[in-house]
Amino acid sequence: MNTLVVDASVVIKWVVEEEGTQHALVLRGAARLIAPDLLVAECANILWKKVQRGELTREEADLAAQLIERADIELFPMRGLLHDATRIAIEISHPAYDCIYLALAMATNARFVTADERLLQKLRFHADTRLTAAVVSLAEA
Image 1: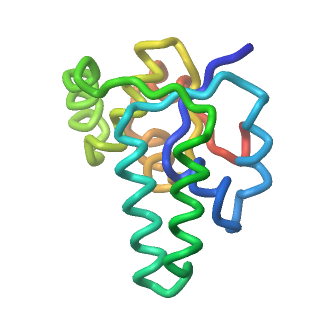
Image 2 (image 1 turned 120 degrees about the horizontal axis):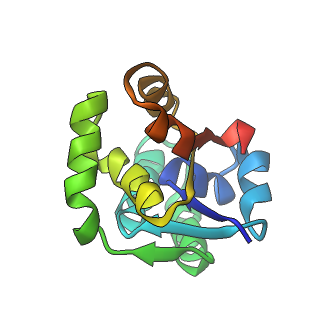
Image 3 (image 1 turned 120 degrees about the vertical axis):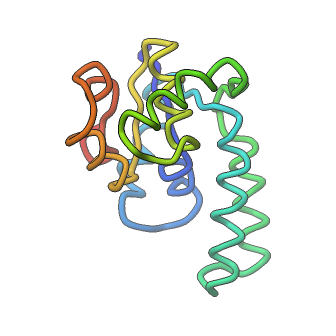
């Protein structure tokens, strides 16, 4: 079974219907899914923002959080990823928290699946082929 690193832009689509939800749902069960433990905080923040914007009720966000907590994703500690994530962030001029996922993919020889178009654009234009080969957009996964 293939191993894929997934970020919050993918995982949130499992519990909130939005563009790309069908693509995201296909990944469940199709591969071993891993993520840095940063995923937990990022998903919580996305759910909070959706409540603040009136896109979800408190109850819907609570249920979504429970479903994400039970999702079959193996979480890895960020501690060993700091150096590589910082190097990648500087290289592609992108926030380091997104690069934690890419650093995990590089460390585990996995593909990183994301729906973050801004990150995908940066990688297309600023990164070496080693980095771009490790990343795939959700639509192409």
